[in-house]
Image (tube, rainbow, N blue to C red; front, side):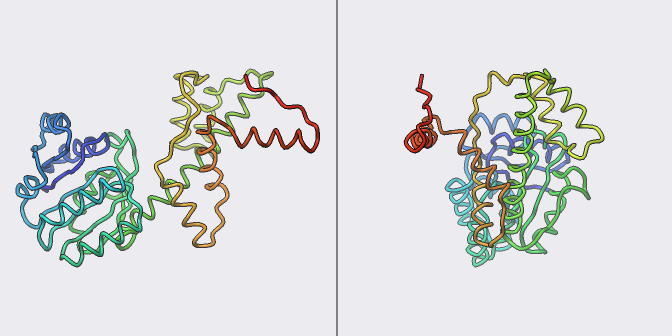
Length: 302
């Protein structure tokens, strides 16, 4: 199959490599010329504009957009929509907000274009292990793209699926990431408690390895946790600052809108926000209040 790939960040480049290995022909574009050259060295055909990508593809065209969510996705999708023809398909494989995906699908549908959203998980390991693909869109469009999904997934039958109409793929990926937040937080808290029990002098990497086999908490996240602890059991070179992609926030907001209690996911998001508070004004005020009502000692800042 011949298709375009817009966006050659780490995941976009890795997906291009996996598709090329499966025999697909890929026309690539990225604002970074060096990224395009690297893809060309791997067998892709390079383009210097979106128009060149579209011109290089046979009708009905398929273009996969793999750029950051928000304005970059909006600009890329809408620019392509101006260049493509009825019957063509645009795939958004990034972490877009599902509401924006629904809107874009409606706009493109009015132009006769297919819009397929693919929630993609797999990170840096996807190029080797395959990607988990949660797909939203019209039945006909998704079915036509199945050779692409089969090549990117762990196997032709596992790790991918058509979950619903346009927007459903990104919605499912949003919830997936919310669950991921909670699982990560639970591991982080558990190992923090183990480390704090200093009189036992516990080997955290050893414990992670024990849990990886036969334990009910065994998982890929635990595998990665074990590897991180093996590399540096003290994690001394890592700052206690945890970023978020935005999908945890969207998940919590959706839970509130739907009246679904989600305390674990919500707490895990708040823990990430807490990790970025270098000033700690709220904690300082708590200490001041305790001193005011109870005369409790205040620890002075260094």
